[in-house]
Image (cartoon, rainbow, N blue to C red; front, side):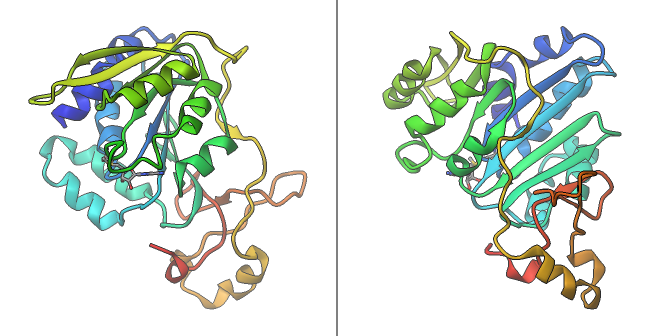
Length: 275
Ligand SMILES: C[S@@+](CC[C@H](N)C(=O)[O-])C[C@H]1O[C@@H](n2cnc3c(N)ncnc32)[C@H](O)[C@@H]1O
């Protein structure tokens, strides 16, 4: 938790930036690699300590190999201070279905959007204005597929001039990739015994205005949801997500889930899950 706080929360200056928000303002964090959700929970702690009550937090994260909710709870168990925040996350954590999942927490004051799949496939579909990036994910030497120019280009597309980023790595290839995409990059002392990390901000924005999260185009579900839906009444209710239609009658890419306000990508029985 201390490392998550130092690298991602402090180096993005989140406590100060949260405290400076105006009433009703929205702050958006985007993260590569949701993992156990510890960065999300650490961000929530800073949020509840510093942000005005009426402000809204949006946290968008991408995860290729989602953990089960049981594993999440186990990982959080090591940190007594996470008690109620961990419970709130575990209560809305989605089924491990590929695609987008949207969850609403704390009376709608926190919105968590998670993409289950490769982030380089999810990012291009996403449309919003990010205020702070958490570049987590395994080390570039172990996970070169993630640390690609395409990631930095997508970050630049979704950033504005006050957007910051922080990452635990300071390897040259990552710094050069970020600089080429339009970010100013600064090396900082790493956490604990780690020598260096880096952080920075977007130098020039292509965004003309701040946008709320949304999708650039409709997500195709991997299986025919209507066919599966016809089977649904025979299945235990909690294992299915209901179809959700917009007022215009078009089938939406996100489906309303068990927990009110939460949306999931498709109707899908849990046993078909890849993970
Ligand atoms: C160090 S862990 C992240 C820890 C996490 N932020 C937390 O707070 O617990 C790195 C995560 O990145 C995910 N990951 C690695 N490559 C990815 C990719 N290409 N797309 C999406 N997620 C990826 C891994 O599955 C892993 O869960």
